[in-house]
Image (cartoon, rainbow, N blue to C red; front, side, top):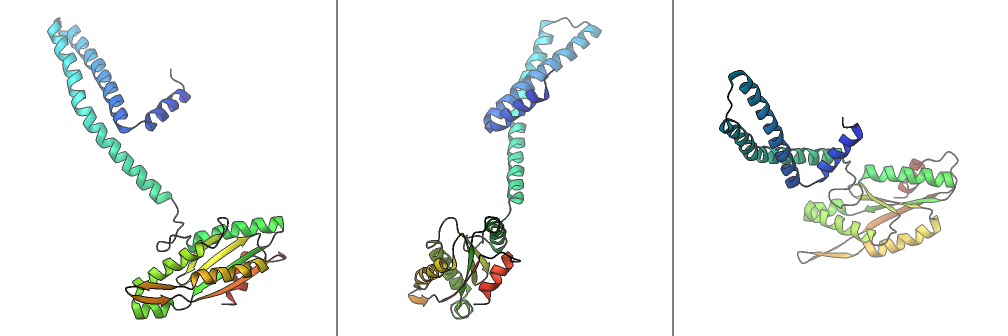
Length: 244
Protein backbone atom coordinates (compact mmCIF):
# COMPACT_ATOMS: atom_id res chain seq x y z
CA UNK A 1 0.00 0.00 0.00
CA UNK A 2 1.27 3.49 -0.87
CA UNK A 3 2.18 5.62 2.13
CA UNK A 4 0.73 9.11 2.56
CA UNK A 5 4.18 10.63 1.87
CA UNK A 6 4.44 8.72 -1.41
CA UNK A 7 0.96 9.83 -2.45
CA UNK A 8 1.82 13.43 -1.56
CA UNK A 9 5.04 13.28 -3.59
CA UNK A 10 3.17 11.86 -6.59
CA UNK A 11 0.54 14.61 -6.30
CA UNK A 12 3.15 17.40 -5.99
CA UNK A 13 5.05 16.06 -8.98
CA UNK A 14 1.85 15.90 -10.98
CA UNK A 15 0.68 19.41 -10.10
CA UNK A 16 4.09 20.93 -10.90
CA UNK A 17 4.10 19.60 -14.48
CA UNK A 18 2.67 21.54 -17.41
CA UNK A 19 -0.88 20.92 -18.62
CA UNK A 20 0.09 18.78 -21.64
CA UNK A 21 2.02 16.35 -19.46
CA UNK A 22 -0.94 16.23 -17.10
CA UNK A 23 -3.29 15.40 -19.98
CA UNK A 24 -0.96 12.63 -21.15
CA UNK A 25 -0.72 11.12 -17.65
CA UNK A 26 -4.48 11.33 -17.12
CA UNK A 27 -5.18 9.80 -20.52
CA UNK A 28 -2.72 6.94 -19.93
CA UNK A 29 -4.17 6.01 -16.55
CA UNK A 30 -7.74 6.41 -17.82
CA UNK A 31 -7.04 4.00 -20.68
CA UNK A 32 -5.37 1.56 -18.27
CA UNK A 33 -8.27 1.75 -15.83
CA UNK A 34 -10.80 1.43 -18.66
CA UNK A 35 -9.00 -1.61 -20.09
CA UNK A 36 -8.87 -3.34 -16.71
CA UNK A 37 -12.53 -2.57 -16.01
CA UNK A 38 -13.77 -3.69 -19.42
CA UNK A 39 -11.73 -6.88 -19.32
CA UNK A 40 -13.03 -7.62 -15.84
CA UNK A 41 -16.64 -7.12 -16.95
CA UNK A 42 -16.11 -9.22 -20.07
CA UNK A 43 -14.60 -12.04 -18.04
CA UNK A 44 -17.66 -12.06 -15.80
CA UNK A 45 -19.98 -12.03 -18.83
CA UNK A 46 -17.89 -14.77 -20.44
CA UNK A 47 -18.13 -16.94 -17.35
CA UNK A 48 -21.92 -16.59 -17.41
CA UNK A 49 -22.67 -16.83 -21.14
CA UNK A 50 -19.53 -18.68 -22.34
CA UNK A 51 -18.47 -16.14 -24.97
CA UNK A 52 -15.11 -17.67 -25.73
CA UNK A 53 -13.99 -15.60 -28.73
CA UNK A 54 -10.83 -13.71 -29.46
CA UNK A 55 -12.85 -11.19 -31.47
CA UNK A 56 -15.12 -10.67 -28.50
CA UNK A 57 -12.22 -9.71 -26.26
CA UNK A 58 -10.52 -7.79 -29.08
CA UNK A 59 -13.52 -5.50 -29.62
CA UNK A 60 -13.79 -4.85 -25.90
CA UNK A 61 -10.07 -4.02 -25.61
CA UNK A 62 -10.22 -1.78 -28.70
CA UNK A 63 -13.20 0.19 -27.40
CA UNK A 64 -11.63 0.54 -23.95
CA UNK A 65 -8.61 2.20 -25.62
CA UNK A 66 -10.28 4.29 -28.35
CA UNK A 67 -13.04 5.89 -26.28
CA UNK A 68 -10.81 7.14 -23.40
CA UNK A 69 -8.17 8.25 -25.92
CA UNK A 70 -10.70 10.61 -27.49
CA UNK A 71 -12.72 11.79 -24.52
CA UNK A 72 -10.12 12.00 -21.73
CA UNK A 73 -7.81 14.65 -23.30
CA UNK A 74 -10.79 16.91 -24.04
CA UNK A 75 -12.28 16.56 -20.56
CA UNK A 76 -8.88 16.78 -18.82
CA UNK A 77 -7.86 19.91 -20.74
CA UNK A 78 -11.05 21.75 -19.78
CA UNK A 79 -10.77 20.63 -16.14
CA UNK A 80 -7.13 21.83 -15.93
CA UNK A 81 -7.95 25.19 -17.55
CA UNK A 82 -10.91 25.66 -15.20
CA UNK A 83 -8.81 24.69 -12.16
CA UNK A 84 -6.04 27.13 -13.13
CA UNK A 85 -8.59 29.95 -13.43
CA UNK A 86 -9.93 29.16 -9.97
CA UNK A 87 -6.39 29.11 -8.49
CA UNK A 88 -5.51 32.45 -10.11
CA UNK A 89 -8.77 33.99 -8.90
CA UNK A 90 -8.10 32.66 -5.40
CA UNK A 91 -4.58 34.09 -5.35
CA UNK A 92 -5.88 37.44 -6.57
CA UNK A 93 -8.51 37.55 -3.84
CA UNK A 94 -6.18 36.38 -1.07
CA UNK A 95 -3.35 38.78 -1.96
CA UNK A 96 -3.77 41.97 0.08
CA UNK A 97 -3.77 45.26 -1.82
CA UNK A 98 -0.57 47.08 -0.88
CA UNK A 99 -0.18 49.78 -3.52
CA UNK A 100 -2.07 52.89 -4.45
CA UNK A 101 -3.86 52.43 -7.79
CA UNK A 102 -2.78 55.80 -9.17
CA UNK A 103 0.78 56.40 -8.00
CA UNK A 104 1.80 52.72 -7.54
CA UNK A 105 3.49 53.53 -4.23
CA UNK A 106 2.24 52.02 -0.95
CA UNK A 107 -1.33 52.80 0.03
CA UNK A 108 -2.18 54.24 3.44
CA UNK A 109 -3.03 50.92 5.09
CA UNK A 110 0.19 49.18 4.06
CA UNK A 111 2.27 52.28 4.78
CA UNK A 112 0.99 52.33 8.36
CA UNK A 113 1.55 48.59 8.73
CA UNK A 114 5.21 48.99 7.75
CA UNK A 115 5.52 52.14 9.84
CA UNK A 116 4.19 50.36 12.95
CA UNK A 117 6.72 47.56 12.43
CA UNK A 118 9.63 50.00 12.02
CA UNK A 119 8.47 52.05 15.01
CA UNK A 120 8.34 48.96 17.24
CA UNK A 121 11.80 47.90 16.03
CA UNK A 122 13.26 51.38 16.58
CA UNK A 123 11.76 51.50 20.05
CA UNK A 124 13.22 48.10 20.94
CA UNK A 125 16.68 49.11 19.68
CA UNK A 126 16.41 52.66 21.10
CA UNK A 127 17.26 54.27 17.79
CA UNK A 128 15.57 57.37 16.34
CA UNK A 129 12.80 57.27 13.78
CA UNK A 130 11.60 60.22 11.73
CA UNK A 131 8.58 61.03 9.59
CA UNK A 132 7.81 63.51 6.80
CA UNK A 133 4.42 64.57 5.56
CA UNK A 134 4.34 66.07 2.07
CA UNK A 135 1.19 67.82 0.90
CA UNK A 136 0.45 68.95 -2.63
CA UNK A 137 -0.95 72.40 -1.80
CA UNK A 138 -2.62 73.26 -5.12
CA UNK A 139 -4.32 69.98 -5.98
CA UNK A 140 -7.90 71.21 -5.47
CA UNK A 141 -7.20 74.29 -7.56
CA UNK A 142 -5.54 72.20 -10.29
CA UNK A 143 -8.48 69.79 -10.40
CA UNK A 144 -10.94 72.67 -10.64
CA UNK A 145 -8.96 74.54 -13.31
CA UNK A 146 -7.61 71.74 -15.50
CA UNK A 147 -9.61 68.68 -14.46
CA UNK A 148 -8.88 65.70 -12.21
CA UNK A 149 -7.07 63.84 -15.00
CA UNK A 150 -4.38 66.54 -15.05
CA UNK A 151 -4.29 66.51 -11.26
CA UNK A 152 -3.69 62.75 -11.31
CA UNK A 153 -0.79 63.17 -13.76
CA UNK A 154 0.82 65.71 -11.44
CA UNK A 155 0.36 63.42 -8.42
CA UNK A 156 2.12 60.63 -10.30
CA UNK A 157 4.99 62.95 -11.26
CA UNK A 158 5.24 64.18 -7.67
CA UNK A 159 5.41 60.67 -6.23
CA UNK A 160 8.01 59.71 -8.83
CA UNK A 161 10.19 62.70 -7.96
CA UNK A 162 10.05 61.87 -4.25
CA UNK A 163 10.88 58.21 -4.91
CA UNK A 164 14.13 59.20 -6.61
CA UNK A 165 15.34 61.11 -3.53
CA UNK A 166 14.91 58.48 -0.79
CA UNK A 167 16.60 55.24 0.23
CA UNK A 168 15.25 51.78 -0.57
CA UNK A 169 14.87 51.18 3.17
CA UNK A 170 12.61 54.22 3.63
CA UNK A 171 8.84 53.78 3.68
CA UNK A 172 6.93 55.92 1.19
CA UNK A 173 3.18 55.86 0.76
CA UNK A 174 0.14 57.88 -0.18
CA UNK A 175 -1.58 58.96 3.03
CA UNK A 176 -4.49 60.97 1.65
CA UNK A 177 -5.58 62.24 -1.75
CA UNK A 178 -3.06 65.11 -1.70
CA UNK A 179 -0.76 63.94 1.09
CA UNK A 180 2.21 61.57 1.22
CA UNK A 181 3.96 60.01 4.20
CA UNK A 182 7.63 59.11 4.51
CA UNK A 183 9.06 57.08 7.40
CA UNK A 184 12.81 57.07 7.98
CA UNK A 185 14.08 54.36 10.34
CA UNK A 186 17.33 55.22 12.17
CA UNK A 187 17.50 58.73 10.77
CA UNK A 188 17.86 61.78 13.00
CA UNK A 189 15.79 64.90 12.51
CA UNK A 190 18.79 67.04 11.51
CA UNK A 191 19.48 64.74 8.56
CA UNK A 192 15.80 64.54 7.68
CA UNK A 193 15.54 68.32 7.58
CA UNK A 194 18.34 68.43 5.02
CA UNK A 195 16.53 65.73 3.07
CA UNK A 196 13.36 67.83 2.97
CA UNK A 197 15.18 70.45 0.94
CA UNK A 198 16.39 67.80 -1.46
CA UNK A 199 12.81 66.51 -1.80
CA UNK A 200 11.48 70.05 -2.32
CA UNK A 201 14.01 70.80 -5.04
CA UNK A 202 13.15 67.56 -6.82
CA UNK A 203 9.39 67.88 -6.42
CA UNK A 204 8.72 71.57 -7.07
CA UNK A 205 9.15 71.50 -10.79
CA UNK A 206 7.16 72.72 -13.78
CA UNK A 207 5.29 69.94 -15.56
CA UNK A 208 4.34 70.64 -19.18
CA UNK A 209 0.98 69.17 -20.19
CA UNK A 210 -0.70 70.07 -23.49
CA UNK A 211 1.62 73.07 -23.95
CA UNK A 212 0.74 74.31 -20.45
CA UNK A 213 3.38 74.56 -17.74
CA UNK A 214 2.05 73.75 -14.27
CA UNK A 215 4.21 74.34 -11.20
CA UNK A 216 4.03 71.78 -8.38
CA UNK A 217 4.03 73.41 -4.95
CA UNK A 218 4.31 71.33 -1.79
CA UNK A 219 4.25 71.73 1.96
CA UNK A 220 6.67 69.61 4.00
CA UNK A 221 6.64 68.88 7.72
CA UNK A 222 8.88 66.52 9.64
CA UNK A 223 9.18 65.07 13.14
CA UNK A 224 11.34 62.71 15.15
CA UNK A 225 10.98 60.34 18.07
CA UNK A 226 14.09 59.43 20.06
CA UNK A 227 12.55 59.32 23.52
CA UNK A 228 10.02 56.52 23.46
CA UNK A 229 8.55 57.11 26.94
CA UNK A 230 4.82 56.78 26.26
CA UNK A 231 5.29 57.52 22.54
CA UNK A 232 3.51 55.68 19.75
CA UNK A 233 3.57 55.87 15.98
CA UNK A 234 0.59 58.22 16.17
CA UNK A 235 2.68 60.53 18.37
CA UNK A 236 5.25 60.75 15.57
CA UNK A 237 2.60 61.37 12.90
CA UNK A 238 0.72 63.97 14.97
CA UNK A 239 3.92 65.95 15.59
CA UNK A 240 4.52 66.16 11.84
CA UNK A 241 0.91 66.87 10.85
CA UNK A 242 0.63 69.79 13.26
CA UNK A 243 3.31 71.58 11.23
CA UNK A 244 1.48 71.28 7.93
